[in-house]
Length: 353
Image (tube, rainbow, N blue to C red):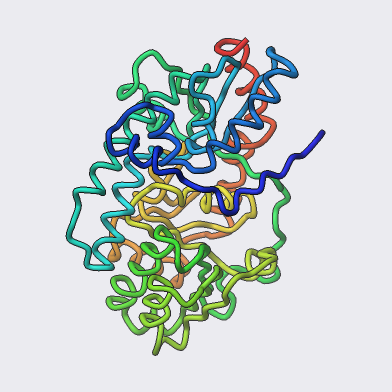
């Protein structure tokens, strides 16, 4: 297998692309402005199409898939989110934090992203989503394109051996993953520190420890999280952690508490693989197949639900070992690489070849 690394640093966006974007035409100008990497990927893609016009080309995310417009080939792309909806949700959160008031440019970009999703989808034989909900919504939105669900798998499927029993010495050790300066983990952590921690009874609060692993630069979102965590002796911000295995082995549960579903569902699947139970908001887990509250995951609608979950864990009413085992079993039956290969082969046979 040959690997080509594309140098994306310093790609210029031309004034013609900018003008085309604001006029909304031609399509290639709009896409160039939305996705600067497109020009570089397109050059590489054209080379490969010439080598073999029967080859199947797979792209990850809309930005890379945009290179296919008006090219002939067997194209597939994987899309982990409803891109335009994700943009609007994250920008609303960002505007709230930074006190931005002008929403005209935000909604114009949303409009152009909606258009680009249609253009790009129609250049592809098959579009893969991580949930049936996403596939359904895209199919309703974009006619005459093939959307199919291919749930997440994980590259390294080795289970992590716990270094101690769950809730050792009646202490609940909680793991949170993701960059403090990324909007989705930021949303999760703000909910935990501002909403959940402020209503936890002392008998629960004094028996939990929150470990936060992820990049935490000197930047607006991460600085707010660090400010919110000040004064909490049971909160430890670890920064970027290269090897997460010791954390998966030593923690009792991972918390995934974003207030919107986009982007963070990968954390849940990673935990299922590793054998670490998950407590998640329903929004964070939305669309993942086979989830059953108190069987393979702990699900909550709000902070009070999580308080009750923590109370049940600390009082011994939740069997975290059994939940972790059932989550791993669900992964093996529905999410594993072996299962995904079989599903993908069937999709390619039906829709691509």
